[in-house]
Length: 197
Image (tube, rainbow, N blue to C red; front, side, top):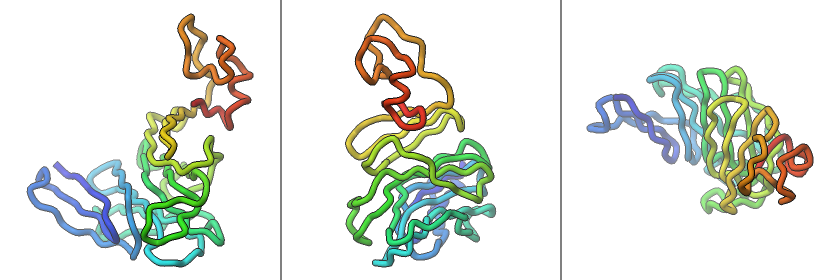
């Protein structure tokens, strides 16, 4: 089968179950995450490989198996060097990318900014959405655009949904943010944008 792997300034692609790999070059940068919706359509994310702080979002898309990569459209975070750790696409037009708003050193894997979450609804244009945490977000898994799980640097796992939290149960619930024994609207107001720890 076909598989991709992210790497510094490149992606690697195999079409023979990993027996051999072909390099698929991207613009200069450090890349950490890649996700594909079919054998030719992928998104790769990372950050600058230099000391620039122009705020450019490193989200690249290929529609031809890595032969060509196009920089996604996203408003730069001026004065910062954002770094994305991972991307997860629900389908060919919807997905999320997560990372850190400012990684001041081009080599060290250290975040001096806040958690960063971007979403796309067309596969090309990406917009920032509120993060439930101030630390960088290391991983994302979206089962749909309405149900997303992220993991932050401090080890917390967050679940974001477009609906209300689960129905209260007699056993302790991780969604009971204020520990009053009931999952209710007060718990929702304690976390940003329906994010639940």
